[in-house]
Image (cartoon, rainbow, N blue to C red; front, side, top):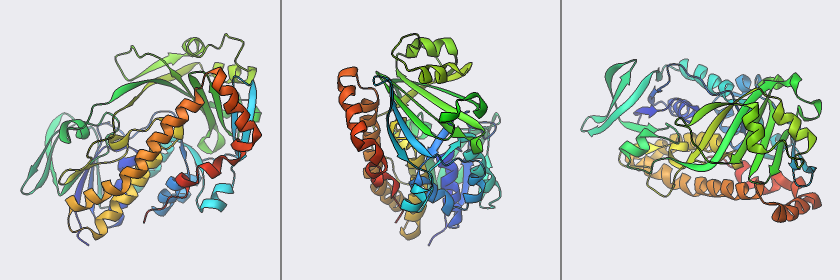
Length: 396
């Protein structure tokens, strides 16, 4: 197998996972991250067995088990029904069924574990405060011009991987792909000490359905903190894609003054004083990710709405498949095309599943009656059965 030098634009979860997977196979990797320090927003992420299997394979089990939580169950509530409509067990069930755990974890803790592993690997170079300005394919390889701490530098490698998120510069400027656009959905995120939350929801992953809105919450940081994400269909008027929000705005957007919200939901959404509001963006994924020695990974290639909890999982899967395609391919362009052909059907299916879930979560009352009835009659207790096609995934 040929060993390559590779540049990864983006030092997030997907970029660092790719760096570790590629370095494991002997490739030299330079990660260009535009932030001055590796940090993630104060929010949680769900890592289902398809993704935790990859992370464990990269040697991160011990580091992640120290900070992750294995929820006892998934509880589904309906605002229309006034309470819980379904519950499915988790705990050790995913480990027994899929051979890998289901974790909920703070994004910063996951990124921190990836960064520690990357910094201790001599084949990986992390360059922070690095903004990609231009990319050119030259006879000697891919030349990436970047501004690093305010100074211009040129990095040269055999190939470039754009893992720079939904608003990817590599996708738009290098690949000529579509720009990100607002999807009409806004996410409000907050974390609190676990002691601030009613005990009945401290160990569960909970999902609340409402009209044109839903809420997800679960424990993080080894059970010391609680993460909540509230998503509403709304207009976006701010200049930045993420801005602070407060309790009053959340109460207004989600209509907490209305009698329809159950007391528990109203209490939970009233707990945080401070929130971060994010515009959920996406783009048409029907375009070519790869050209020559350049390809895309994660949200840069296939932005996924959070309704399937698989955005991070798909980036982690991408990283493993990308590394494996380099093992048998005659050259980088062939490897990148093989990677794209392997990943596109699955990521497209997950993107479509997320869109479908969004419709189910946000149903108006008339349709929601039948949704809730179906869940109460037993469909909700078999949730993991319907997710088998996602959770059983293994790289081949």
